[in-house]
Image (tube, rainbow, N blue to C red; front, side):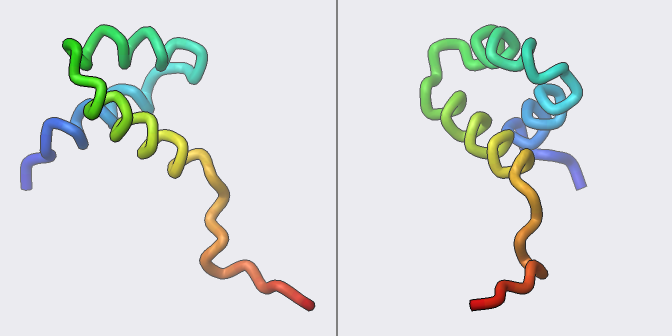
Length: 58
């Protein structure tokens, strides 16, 4: 299966050092602020620890 354009750009952004990602996003979004927001959301979610199996005690 071929990745969507958003998935491909996310993978390329993820391969960049975190400090270089904003400039990369500026270059690839071509004035599409919604695209940038989607990519930033994906990158932020990727950076969050996986809490699915975290056990919380009250």
